[in-house]
Image 1 (cartoon, rainbow over the protein chains, first blue to last red):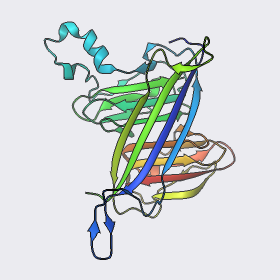
Image 2 (tube, each protein chain N blue to C red):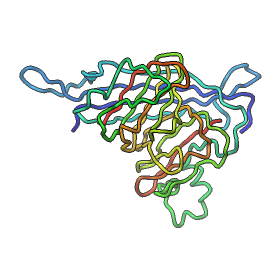
Image 3 (cartoon, each protein chain N blue to C red):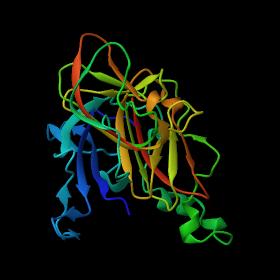
Length: 164
Length: 132
């Protein structure tokens, strides 16, 4: 939780594609992907942001969720199996961190098997993460405690970083 | 199957400064690089305002896609010096996009009328995709 200094490097690639190419006599699905004919380009960025060396509490991140949860649930594994032991998000919204400090940087990845929805205010879930999908953003005028997450159906598991 | 798709790859590397080596290494709490990849199928038929390569942003909140439809994907790249702020509910601007940064996400069927951008002062310039 404490450190001399912390920095988060990040990059994004966005590639708009089309599946099929319409030729004069037929439509083919090429083995190579073609850039979208409307947008005509790809997008990207690569940069970094300095975050506070000493983060608010131990809940500022959560990675390797299944392993840690499985470990803590070792004695109760008689009622769980390995796959289920890390699936801890339900359809009820869960606040990820109770700190009222201003959020600077957020990262999320769905490491479960069902879609996850993210809320920036605890009531409206606008961001969507399909399994294996990840997103990040720089926050503005919102506390760490404003971030909530839930599974769209069944249960799922979330990897996250909430930096101040 | 929709013909149009958008492939998005993100990578985040949390690091921590180590005095002894005078450089940044893997963050000691998180301990690894984080990444994800997703392919989003978007509708073949999009409104003419679903993308732009040159959109000026002012201090007044502006709707990007004016079709009045439900949006499932957003990408914004800030090309200019001033920070751009994004609202997904039409009134609260909780996401900041700095110069040269890209924000990209799938959305949980957000109304296009509620997706607005603005600056805090002066103007900026963005490229965007706001797709149904």
